[in-house]
Length: 34
Image (cartoon, rainbow, N blue to C red; front, top):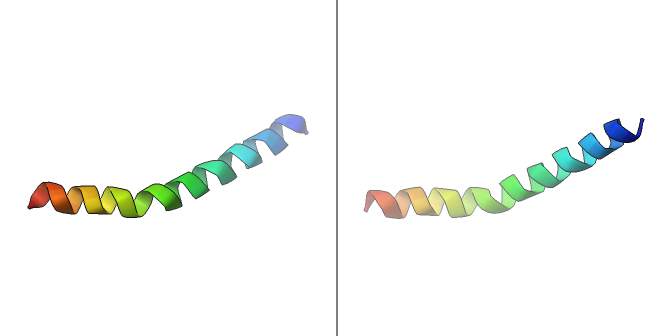
């Protein structure tokens, strides 16, 4: 049970990190093109 909760917590953190990094990554790829 604890491991499942830990996994859920980690997945949630990963999702938030992805949402934060998504715009930065898109900007980086756009700037790399130009």
